[in-house]
Each structure stands twice: as structure tokens, then as C-alpha cells.
Amino acid sequence: MEFPSIVAGNSRSQKGPVKKQCQVLGLTDKCLVERRDRLCTDRNTVDVDQQKHQRFAELFVRNEAAVYRYIVSLIPNRADADEVFQQTNLTLWTIWDRYDPDREFLPWAFGIARNESRNFIRPRRSRHCELTDDVIAELTERRLREQEHLVEQQEALNDCLEKLPSRQRDLIHLCYGSEASMKVVAKQRGQSPDALYKALQRIRDLLHDCVQRNLVLASRS
Image (cartoon, rainbow, N blue to C red; front, side):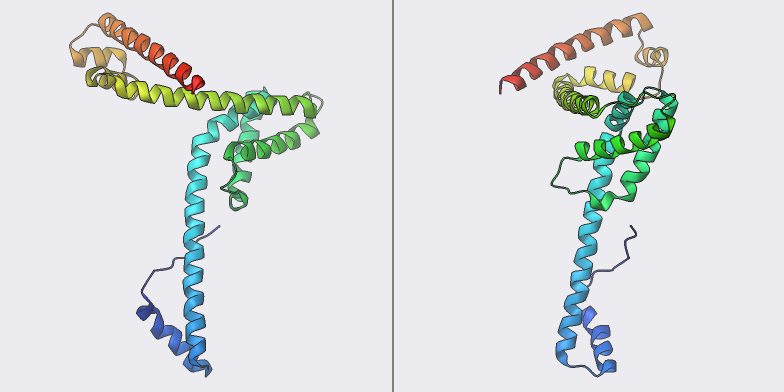
């Protein structure tokens, strides 16, 4: 969906051209009010659409890995799964404006992926096992539960990373958030690679214990 470019202005800046249109048409002052109100309504509608589109894009990026994993559970062949994933993405972007922001995004996206998977499998039954509706429903529910657990784990990990001393947190970002090899990082820090690996292992152990505690506390709340 294309968004027209509308430059917001005050009522005075809109009044001139709108009034001129009404005068050309020989209409009354009521025309001026109605047309100015229509301009404001149109501009507000576009603003809402842009916000909805931005929200959709954020949800799409956040959940595309989960959608791909779901497709792989329905179509184990990776090359075929990749093809269905691309078609699913195309469909999602084609009908993005049908998404209701009040609904959860992932179940809706899974529904699109499920339909695309069926469309892909149907003419290829000779080399694909067509799953029953009950099996697909079970896989869908399982993937949704797994994704919920992954989100909880990620939130717990983020919290634990924030609790690390800055030196340890910087080391994690340097080793896992950049393209530098362990040898390069060790050299930059004046350490041997073996000493760096041991330091990382201690941090991983701390993070693992912290995440587990957070998950247990979350399950009790």
C-alpha cells in the first residue's frame, strides 16, 4: 500500500486553496468547512495507516524466525521450506493491512504459513506426506508454546546480562556481538585464547544460573 505524501499544516495554511476551490465552484462557506474537515480526516487516516504499517513491520521482523521454524516443522525439506517461507512473506506483506493489531501476530502469521504450506504440498503429494488437520493443529500449538518459552528465556537473559559487571558484559558483546575472532579478541585484551575461553565459560555459567532462577521465579508469579 502506497502512502500519499501529505504535509501537515495549520488551518490557516489549508484555508486558502480550499476556499479558492469553493469559490470557483460557486459554493457557500459551508463548502469551505466541509472540505477543510475532509482534508484533516484524510490526513489523520494516512497517519493511522503509517503507524499500523510500522507496527506490522516491527512484528514481522520480530517473528519471522518463528514463522520459518513453523514451516520447517510442516515441510522438513529445507529447500522446499525456504520456498514456502518466501511465499509466506510475500503474502504477509501483500495483506498486511488486514492484520488486526488487537490480535496476536504469531497465530495469524502461522495461519498464513499453514495455508501456503498446504498449497505447496497439494500438487507434490508424491514426494511430500500431507499432514492431517489434527497433526497440523498439534504442531501449531506446540510451536506457539515453544515461541512463548523462547521469549521468556530471552527476557530473562536480557535481565541477567544487565546485572553483569560492565567488564564481563563488554566481553560478551565483544565476543558474540561482533565479527572478531576469539584470537583477535584475546590479543586485544592481552590474554591467551585459552584464558579468554575460560573467562567466557565462567560468564556463561553465571548467566545460565541467573536465567534458570528468573524462569523459576516467573513460573511462580
